[in-house]
Length: 449
Image (cartoon, rainbow, N blue to C red; front, side):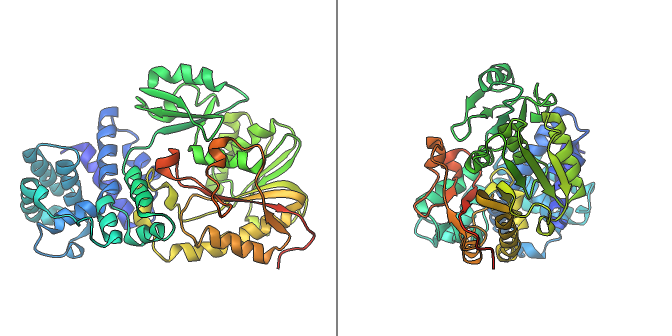
């Protein structure tokens, strides 16, 4: 019985059966695996997650019943087998044999005969299965070709030209580069790039951030690279790094990160403040607060004030802050290239539900600002309900705010600000996750309604 295939089965079944997150599931089931087995299982898991609709299309063409009639364990084994045959080029006989063996050792055991028959047909004739033609309904064609939910494709097409959306979805199907943020208090970007060159096939600076490095062909897990434990760098997407520069903090300011999570952006803000001023990091989750404290300790930023609290309940910083970051909880659809499980965990109803919380957090940030202070509303998603419409709602609710960007932004960052005045990154253009941001300055005494 192949242990990496069994681990891949468990991760995929766990993701489809409940609220498990990809990172935690991978850690739980692959932590003790040998490096070669871990790499194979991870590659197989991502192949299924990135291509699920396409694989289901191939399987449906060789089944005598709808996929929804199959037990989830049986469907999971079929997806794994189809992924090996079509995407990983495993020999046909090995695909079928490995899938049947996997079924025998898992809750899919009752579907052994079906799995054997269907995969034999798939490995023989999957290339003959028709795909939508170019003149087909663009939503359905792009959805099936690039394995993104149709509702998400429709949302992107409502905002961007079809050729941009197709390039975007295609980019989401590729392995993104590993992006690091150099800790300027402990290292220089050029020195770190030189020291990491032996661990990757390519190390380049990223134009979206003066601290950013892109690595391709990394030979070991990112957290095992030399310098991580000693706080020389953090693992952070380039678009996320750009957020701290958009906020434009300076040493001596009073700053708050109202949705700090594990502290990726908090650590960056601390570095830009250079230990001068005040920085509060707020999050309601005990687990995330523990991760935040650990991360700040690794980076040498223990001076940051950490608060375990719901940001909406903060009362002791009213109208006293120079800068506030609202990295709002969102649907996360801007990271579904790096995190393909997000595509299948979200529903069309999620954006509107999350927008209510996002607007509340943004209005709270506005209340905490002093006159002349600035807030940055940020999401890593692409829906209008969570982005443009939240900002419109905030401006209607808090008339003392106006949209304004710093004048000295780097050219690569400024090109991401569109005609509507909002900052957006696009994966294929910017080699980064899809982020949205709006920077709002408090110019009047009028409070929020």
